[in-house]
Amino acid sequence: MCKVIYHPKYGEYDLGAEHPFSPLRVEMVFDLLKELGIQTDIIQPEPVTPEDLEVIHSKNYIEVVEALSKGEKRAEAEAYGFGTQDNPIVLGMTEGARYQVGGTLLGAKLLVENKTHKVLQFGGGFHHAHKSLAAGFCTYNDLALAIKYMTDQGWHVAYLDVDVHHGDGVQEMFYSDENVMTISMHESGEYLFPGTGWLHELGRGMGRSLKLNLPLEPFTEGDSYLEVLEGVVVPALEWFRPDALVIQAGADPHFSDPLADLMLTTHDFEKLYKKIFEIIDNNCKGRALFTLGGGYSITATSRIWTLLFLLLHNIDLPDKLPEKWRKRWQEKLGKPMPKYLHDKIPAYDPIPRKPEIDRHNKELIQRLLDYVAADWL
Image (cartoon, rainbow, N blue to C red; front, top):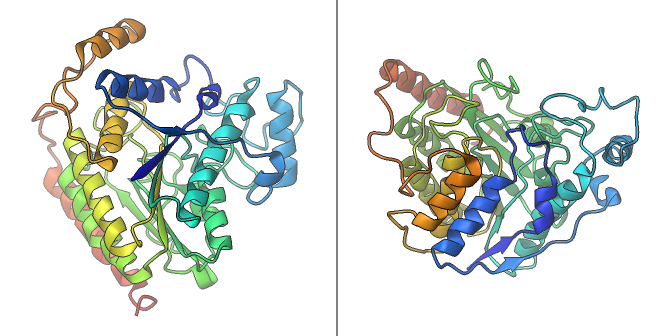
């Protein structure tokens, strides 16, 4: 059975009404599950303390972030990544952030204590936060703290990032760590923030060939995306055989996402999640911790994360979305709501460069496998 973690305080990590990182995304999911008549048994986490965060963040960074959250002026704010459009300074911002980090850490503890084999943490996924830098809507790196907790218990941990943006913060924190494999499938940094995540970023020292990056071409469609997953992620985890897999389940590879250019549909996400479940059971001792992440088409993201919940709980997928839910959110958002859980087929016009894009992505598979071959023997 999958445990679900959430706390209403998560919504206090709110970067502003016009900011794309909206707490409404998760609110829509729970509201949809309720309208579908699905009971959600929620475990509520405690927030982490500033002292807990010192495992992965510098003490001075934490002190500055907490001070900014209280409305204090700090000279280091800009150097630490605050006061930008991506990471504005918002009163009370750390309260919700520390609850979300606490949720991901709780998920790791549930796995280590063998209280469950799968966890869905309905928040977190702040993969751009660095040791002393906020970036990409992320303040504290919940994923890194959870992974560090598991490795401190003697576990080998794999991290799979399917967010459309490179998981740079997580990669950086474990770049030399032989106990952690990181795999990021993202739109190429040539076109998209944070501009990192190249094939040659393989790790350092004992961590070499354990940091894998798959910079996909813009307008990559689901069939090519899944081919790359099959070609690299499957053999990587067959070789590494971790004690658990942590998945950052960003929904922004969806074709309608306004901040990126991958072309996955909800049908592709269903195939992706089912393949990940298979990988978990075959190569990761059946243990997994899912967090959320990016996803800025609110109508797509709410459906994708509902899909993830339903699949994790082996609940039959509905065809139509409840009319009450559609009308309620149509009024709240002021935009039309889809009638169905899944996207229509075809969901968009044909991609003119498809053969070229598919060929590029196929070449990525072989090039990366060639890079790591000697170390994987």
